[in-house]
Length: 193
Image 1 (cartoon, rainbow, N blue to C red):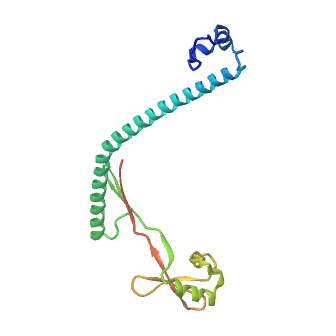
Image 2 (image 1 turned 30 degrees about the horizontal axis):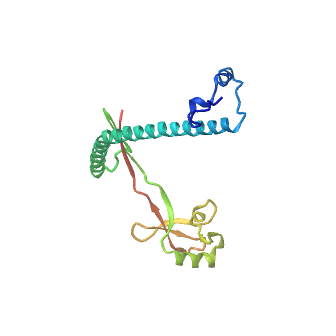
């Protein structure tokens, strides 16, 4: 119950002793506009407190992440430095020994080389589109479906072309224009044991 001379916005004076007892025993409920208004202010107050706490936590997390990033940056730079030099060492060994195994073992770890992925790529889209429209409509639907060239049973063969290029040959013996095999570079890695 509100005292007659009390400020209606004073949160502590809106509830009387009976209200406090009912809150503690779980039977309290909002029965009028004054208590509904009080509850809305409490709702706002509690949400602002949650927002304040979450903002403080976000600031603290950002501060800790900045400390972590600074501490880890030098270590990551060191990792890159050593990996680059181990890869260079591996490449020099390959120049001297063409039969070097893919995994070069040392007492403290290994330096490996994995073959890069290989795929067919359209290098002259217009030439390929013209050829596909005239010879194999299944290879062109709005965009070139070069993956169809390497599908099992498609009837195309990859053969060495001029220089280091691998070209595709159709069943008819015709070289498919505007397409050749592309290989990603080999992937090197060093891993301590």
